[in-house]
Amino acid sequence: MSKPLTIADLKKLARRRVPRMFFDYADSGAWTEGTYRANEEDYSKIKLRQRVLVDMTDRSLESTMVGQKVSMPVALAPTGLTGMQHADGEMLAAKAAEEFGVPFTLSTMSICSIEDVASVTSKPFWFQLYVMKDRGFIERLIGRAKAANCSALVVTADLQILGQRHKDIRNGLSAPPKPTLDAAFQLVTRPRWCLEMLGTKRRSFGNIVGHASNVSDLSSLGAWTAEQFDPRLSWSDIRWIKDLWGGKLIIKGILDEEDARAAADTGADAIIVSNHGGRQLDGAPSSISMLPKIVEAVGDRIEVHVDGGIRSGQDVLKAVALGARGTYIGRPFLYGLGAMGKAGVTTALEIIRNELDITMALCGKRDIQTIDRSILANTSF
Image (cartoon, rainbow, N blue to C red; front, side, top):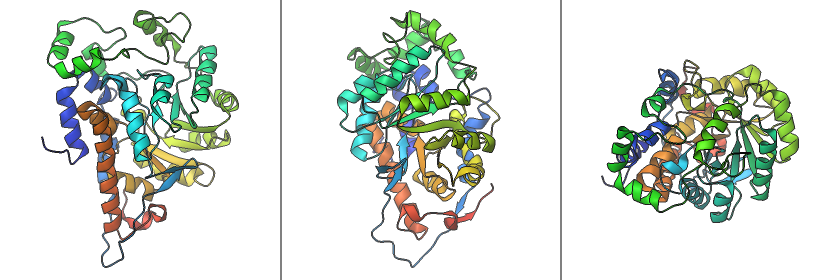
């Protein structure tokens, strides 16, 4: 394939180069995957106003997210197992994001550790926190994020229990991996991926193994993880985390106006309208369909961001028009990473930026910070 022109092009390349169990992990939703599909499909229902004979020179995509200057209102979302799309994946993606001038968010369930990412970056990145039952581990994890100079903490609120993802179950994805003929076939047919993984020591969950109590290898990790997600997580825990962290706090996983009001009451700096990429409650509405309602409910009290379903720069522009101060891309950068490593992440960001810039111009606008509903021809929401 010649140079990828779209996120879909990167997806095709990644599917060829990444073992199916790991590609499917990134590219799957819960149960019927109805919400996963709706996240993408609902963007196509939003139409734009084409404007002509207006000055389109000197355009700017620069903005801020939680007070941090960004080259465009896009951040790399926290994604688990990123380092299994490509060897040292989180480190490569973080470097690409830093060079591009957008935030990178490291997942608790990353392969490369907080310290690994800090070792290859010169500017602060963001850290995403899953709240486990072991509060001592959480305190140490937050301390490590502070020591790495992370500039924002993203607390995920919608994973108290794990949604059922059929592709992962059928692929036998687990920690440690199950040795099956199918898994062996997947690896044999992806020799370049295997060689890259043999060349790195980072093949486990770097933030957990060796840091959580009694978790010293993949065998002990599986049992620990299965029992550690906390179904009792509550708003009081968010306040405890906010006090412990002391810096910029973003709450991810808000999909309801009532929850948005509760999040604003905590004093957090931003919320992310999100349904976990369709990987939790199948049958929930798409993120973009709930964005206007949540902006109306709390947009004057707290910064509102959105993730889920963004596959183009046009999608970013539509989200900003509906009130999002920032957007997050997960699967698009994972496709780029799986397809071409660090260069693929940069390519994904370039595709998003180019589409965003051109679309903004064709809507008759020159500055992303002036975008509002006036660029929309209609909205179904």
